Length: 312
Image 1: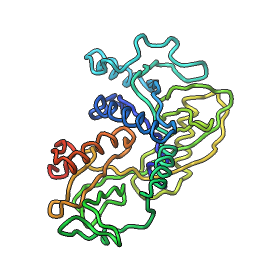
Image 2 (image 1 turned 135 degrees about the vertical axis):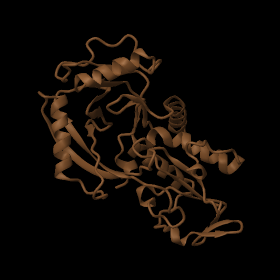
Image 3 (image 1 turned 90 degrees about the vertical axis):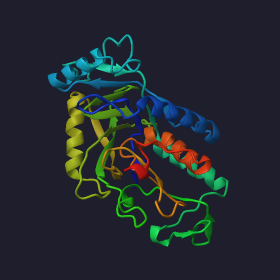
């Protein structure tokens, strides 16, 4: 199970316990929204949804940090104005308040991936095989792998890219994450709720909630420990709700030291390219990064220094 297939697909501008702005959110969100809306037309499938997000404070420290940064103008144009009253419906724990974000959304990554795969299959442009980096041969005119020749090969290998023989110096700090899909009785809320865990409705009538971070072992096996953590947080958000777990998934996020994506050519074999390090924000960052890399390969445009492999 890959991280893309179980990803919540959230596009969230304000992150972490310190309420920091997500890296380059305004431009990456605009690129993502344009990309997904265009693809929905081509694939005739809906998978992108602009969706408001409610962040609830867990303690007074969080409330103070947010209010200070909001007073400094950090979140201009991102918050709902006016804020809804009440902020959340009855049954949602909210002793300390919170705030609603107007500019956010979610991507149903499983639906997006399935529709994309079907589209490329119809074009005869999809091939499913095991591909080892060691078997990719750099040539004077590009690359060769088995019977396929191409001008470039982009290695998008997620956390398995750690130790890749072509790009061994990329400093991975990947993290395992786990999520639950739950059925909640008599609960309707279209927004994303976040109070330690996020919770939002999925397309199949279930709700998705998570997540956890762990670093050892890095595998895709769901654990009882992570399930207990997520369930405890869900009870903290919906203390009176009745719910049952429908499914439990685990995957590994491909995080790179510095927590920014990494793109670029191999220093000695320019036909070989890396696209990795999307971490927990692949749905938000991938379209912007893909446009960067495409322009670099096709038009020889420079990569943004913050993601350029050559500048790390």
